[in-house]
Image (cartoon, rainbow, N blue to C red; front, side, top):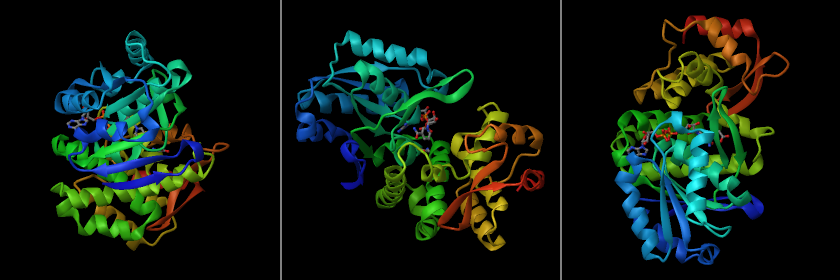
Length: 360
Ligand code: NAD
Ligand code: GLY
């Protein structure tokens, strides 16, 4: 197995990456001092789609190792990432009598990871949890870094906590059942890491497209590991996003605005971020040749880079003005100086509007 350490003092943890490893999770936990003294009572939080595919494997692995897992199932979908369903999870933990030395295994994509992590952060004022991410997006992004939470009718991810997992257990074989569209959307976040931090990685993603799309396990491990290394490095320097961590939002200012304006139904998050990364590259002072490389790589994975004609630029601008990076009415973006290096910089509104009107 490959491993990446997230160095955060007493909250440090490992990301372990392998193929076909879900069946070993119980043995690993039991064999590690940190977990050995846990209460036998644990919970596996998942949704029906993922539990049907991988739930029994994880359950049996935990039970064979001597844990007594309770399964907690929430419906599949972003619309269930709510306080109400977090409360449902907490109720199941209470009924099953989990105690302060118990832990939760979050088995699923980013929705499950965020919500189970949030439940862990609040159950008896905080218990440990393991992320077992099963989407590409969750394996390279949401399972690492400790952002947990739920949505509110007035805003996405508006209720939450920074609560680091104690282990991230990545089984790349789970990507074999992930719908292709979800996989491709996750690739947008992988490309993002190349743009913000590593030009060689950016090239690797381009050169190894065939292996990556064929889910070759070596290629998958390489892209997931490198993405996690970059995320771990950024998070360890700025856990609570007071500065550097904002670079992980490259492409996300425009991306979030697209999601807002289209009511979160038309684009998967990664699909909107892909358009955002290309649009935002136009705001940067980088050679056109480099902008074209970004566009080519994104499109080579079947992702769009242009705004659809029916999106109103005024509405996009309004959505961007409430972005967390906006400062005193000024729009700020994560802009590449060159591929592999970015800065958070203000951009004049007329420049943004001009690029949006051109549509990419
Ligand atoms: P998701 O969790 O909704 O999963 C997408 C779909 O794939 C779901 O229908 C799910 O049931 C299914 N699925 C998951 N794994 C599967 C598998 N192996 N085989 C078959 N189907 C599978 O979506 P996502 O893209 O993983 O996560 C999106 C969420 O992540 C959003 O709520 C977003 O806010 C959050 N997020 C959080 C962070 C963070 O830092 N915490 C970062 C990025 C995104
Ligand atoms: N997904 C952005 C972050 O974790 O900060």
